[in-house]
Image (cartoon, rainbow, N blue to C red):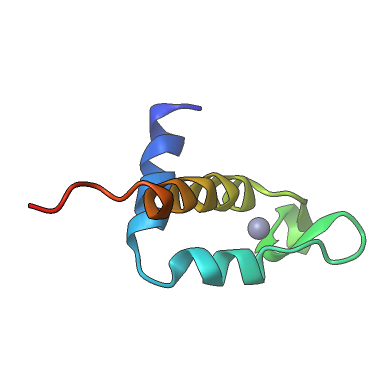
Length: 73
Ligand SMILES: [Zn+2]
């Protein structure tokens, strides 16, 4: 994963509600394409799109954080 992707994933984890919204919106439209992402020439992007992949990674990190919370200050 590139540093840019890593930054995106961290952003998704830290914005309250964003992860859930992305997981809900970026779904397969039934034809192997993303329902939320605009593609070239008014088409769609193949699913899972980059946003979905980042959201899936963010979901993993969020789960790990819940399982192993950082020490209280
Ligand atoms: Zn998408």
